Length: 201
Image (tube, rainbow, N blue to C red; front, side, top):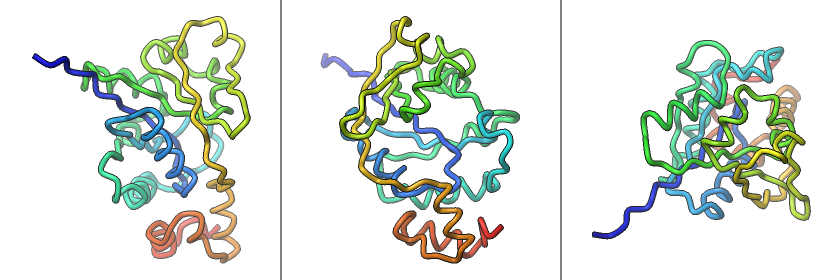
């Protein structure tokens, strides 16, 4: 009987307010470098790190992610954090995924800035136990963990971050100035933002 390998699943969370092509490029990079069977895009409900800023309504962020990923069968939208009440915590998402899909090998995809402060996240030692941490860093840049993580055994993997300077903040600023955002988010997401008059103020 052939040995069954554990499915390799990436978890890519964020506010996605809005999702942009640098998000897409990083997700594609993770698919290839981590040899993932699927990558879950997980829009946050209310991220605890951004408690002071009002996000676009969850249904709009969910819809924009769907438009961003609809041509890649290994990308999947997971709206568990939107459906959850209260602040969004990564550890709860990992627990839920493990309970509902036992046997998967999980990879948490984060940026270098998040890795450097992962010790501030709720139940961070449990996060390290439940997932391999895949850290996006620019070419030539070493990944650097917080001191507490450096003395805590865990698995990490460096992803070569594509050289794209897009950010959700820059997209929102361009919308407010009436500038063309299609090169940053693609035609489908740009059209959605225009139709629903998002980020105008």
